[in-house]
Image: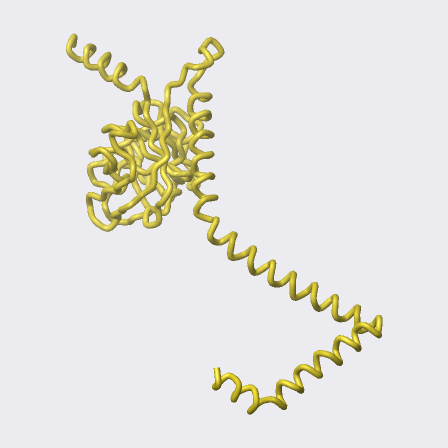
Length: 271
């Protein structure tokens, strides 16, 4: 306490100057309308600046929650879209072919011949093998293994990957594979020579897939060449997804897949 008293006594002239300055400012502001106007404008500017900074800080920390809400909203929109595209007027209102589950990537590889992605949803969330995984921009891969809380996804950047794909707005389809050379380019093979192609055309999932809904975006044609037999094209496809930067995903389940596969198996057995 004595130190505080000594400090005040030592700097008493400075304290007196500050007090007198404040008093003079108050008297000046109260007695002159011009100074009042300047004071209040400055005060409003300072208050506004403080509120602006405070709001910016609050908005920053609210981004994660807002992102989660948007992810959840997109999940519902995609569910409605996929089932709208596959429904007919005769379908009942509760008839849905696809289910959609939102998930987030917790591990992603893209620099090896066989790349895999780990997501934070598993068996307890209804995730099973051979479900399709997409992002807001396009396809990502197919679920390969699951645990109670997680799943691994075979990326489209995997030399084992083989997905039915087509040229948008046509019925020309082939197989989407990867040659392990570039992390942003895959190959679409077995497109017949009769197909009309142009650089920049969009490639989407095909109707022959029992995993993905038709017309999910994949990428655009970068270049194309005829194969050795001159009978079909090999197309280089630039992916819409940046495979090195993936976070939010959606796992898509075709509820008719098992029925389709069982019917196809019976047909093969008869042959």
